[in-house]
Structure formats: structure tokens, C-alpha cells
Image (cartoon, rainbow over all chains, first blue to last red; front, side, top):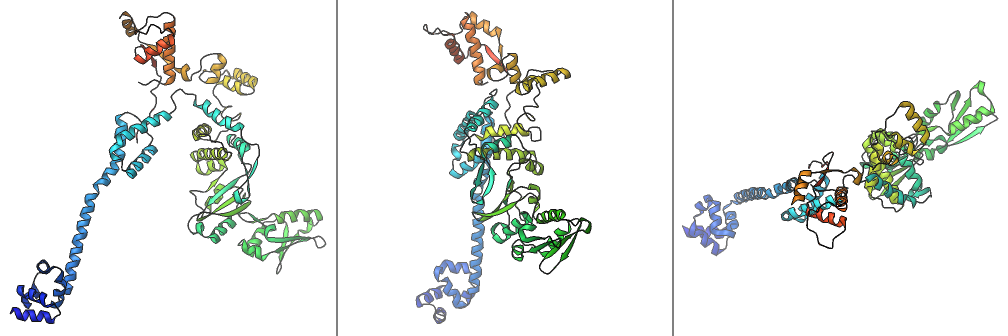
Length: 478
Length: 65
């Protein structure tokens, strides 16, 4: 029996040695039915050959697939076992908070965030106690003490570098050749909360395809930038025939993506005129009653300045490539309208018009805008003022929900105390009107107390002492 | 309670005024120490000055989020 099996196996392509071995365990019939696992135990690497010989390769694959699945499940289980450290990672935060709470201290959440990140990054979980302790210490050292004259410090800290600022008003911002007010004039503008900045500019960021594709970015730039008739057409005044001839330049019209219909639509807005469309030109006649030279001149000026496309207020738009994206810089600003355009990234686009930001995005955004503008103006001049001083100014300006200037019409002029207001400007007027109204001064602020001759309610002057006499007398007796 | 530097200055100031005007001392001091301010400082460090401050409001500490 076994010899038959051996021969059969050799015929089917096994080596003599292997065939002998197989034959010693199984007959051919048995081999066909035998359990694969058992076979594997007995023959190990040769299993493949044997199964092929008996025509059971498919089964082998199945087994293999099963084995793989089992492995996968095992892996998954292993992964699951590995997840607990992740849970620990979550608890790094809790741990920190616990430590802080235990010591009855406080850390702002963004510091905690940073902390958690760094600890996980550098695997410092076991040193968490010491680290948090140090962080709290450092944080408390940077705090301003209660009763400290922070406003005074802020005023000095901004004022002194301010004296070093150049009076040079204009500056060309980079390659874009856009004129921007900078330096002291700009800082004054911000602090005075002027309605319109003297040089409004916008930085328009784009999203999606507009971001990377220059052509698409150009499309938006054309939509934003104001195009007047004079930019795309030649305008002549024919005095003898009393008419204005417009010769549109097809080239520049195509570049600006303007159709002939757009042009005619814009021209229809004109009053008291007659429009004749020729082949390559458009003729405009003033109405019969108004046919005189002066009217023609006036009309010609009006026609030249007709807006065909674009957003009001935006005089120029320039595309610049920054990194891998295209950014549009504009001279002139119209925050609301620009944000409405499709393809403009509403989350990053900014203007230097603080009032526009206030109207569109609200007071908190305006506060941030003040901080950013003032900080970058100082920074640009090479003056490093701590941002917290500027934050204080911005807070003061926006505290009542609207933007108030610092100065006569704003913060200083609206103080509660009569004496403080009188100390600031137009002393007599303030005192007289206060007397007429019967105003009461509660002497709560600094300026009024200085004038009256009392210690001010700041620093040492604000500390109230208390004494425990019983305790005192006991100690003295000892 | 930790004192702010203003409170510390105020307490030591008040105490040194008392000492300067002849108030009995609360601790034993080195013989060569005669400056009332120095004496008050020493007393403050030892924590024996019975003067404290009255705070209008608890200094606000934000909640830990």
C-alpha cells in the first residue's frame, strides 16, 4: 500500500525522500481527506507541494486566508490593548487640571493646551507635577499684581517708543506698489478711531480653485476692481456734430472680461441722452434742448467716469503670489461687498478699515483689528511694544460695544467725573456746565483725587489696614 | 494669604511708624539694629505684625477649564 502511495507521489512531482515520508503516514485516499493543520504539523514547509500533488491547493489558500484573518483579529486585539495609553493621553489634561485645582491656582486654557501637547510630544508624563508647578510659578510671575497702575504703564510703554516714530507718512508696501499710511499718522488714525482710513487697503485671500489658479484669481480681481469707461475705450468729443464718440478697445475689454452688453447697460444709466450704436463705436447725443458746448463737456466727463464693473471704492487690485497661493491686494476698501463675492475666503480676508470690520463682523473683531493694526504699525517701525499694552487700549476703546476714540469726543471726554474731564480739556466749560446741572463727583478716579489732594486709589494708596488689637496687646505683654 | 507688594509696603510702613514713635517691639532684635524700617521688615518676615489688610473683593481668579 505504502509503496503505491510513494510511487504515486513521485509521479506527481515530489522528491523521493518526501514521497517516502508521506507514504509512511498516509495512503493517497487518506491524504485527500486529511486535515490541513495536521499535515502542516507533520510536513512543515513541504505542505505546499503535497497539497498540490493531491489537488488541494485551493484549500491551502483558504487556510492561508483564515490564518490571515486570525492574525488580523489578533492585531486588532493587540491594538485595542495598546489604546489604553491613548486614554492616558486624554488624562494628561485632567491630571494637569487636578494638580492646578489641588493647589488652588489658575492657568489659562490655552497654556494648558500647549502644555498637554508638549508633554505628549516629549513623553514627560512622569514629571508632570514638577512641570505644572514651574508653569504656575512662571505664570504668576508674569501676572500684574492687583492695584497696579496698568494703564499708566501701558501709556508710557506705547508713548515712549511713539516719540521715536518717523514722521514719514508714506511707504510702498512691498512689490505691490500700494500706498499705505504708516508710522505716527497711522497710529493716530487708529487711536482716534477715524471713520475712513486715509489709505484704505484690503488683503483678499481666495479659496478653492481661485487660490491656486492665476487665471481664476484674475477673474476675481477683475470683479473687484472698478473699471471705468475711460479704462477700456477711447472717448472723443465731436464739437461740430455735438456728439461724443466712444471707441471701445476690444482687447482691453476681453482682458477685463467685459461684454458689449455690459457697456450698453452702463451707458443706459445716463440721463437726457440719445445713444446710437454703430459697428465699432457708440455715439452719444445730448438731448435737443440741452445742445450746447458746456453741456457736451459735462457729459463727456460723466461718460468717462461711468463705472462698468467692479465694487465701489476699490481703485486697484493687484495679484501677488505668496507661497503656493494667489492673494489680491487692493487699494481702497469695501469689506462687505468683497466678502459677498464667490471664491473669496471669508475667514482670512482683512481690511485696514476698522469701522468696516465693526459693522460687518462685530465689536470683538473690531477689537482684534485695532490690536493687529496698532501692533503691526509699531512693529513695522521696529518698535517692540508688548502686545498687552495695546490690548488694554483696544479694550478701553471697545468696552461699551462701539468704537470710541481716545480723546475729546471719546474715552477722555466721556469720563464720569467732572473734575477729571475739566482736568483734560476746556476746563471752564466743563465746570460751568457741571455747576448748572448740579453734577456730583464721587472722587473715585485718579485725576480728581490728585486735584483734591487725596491719596489716589491705586497701589499703596488703595490698601486698607486692619489691626487685631487683642492679639497685639497679648504680644506686647509677653 | 499672600500680600501684594503694595500691601506689604503699606503694612511695613505703618508698623515702622509705630516703632519710630516708640511702640514696644514684638521680637528680640540685634542690638545694633536701630532703623525702625529695618525692624519692621524683620517683624514682617517673622510674621508677628498684628496688622493685616481689608480687601474689598476677593481677587478674582478665573475657573480652571
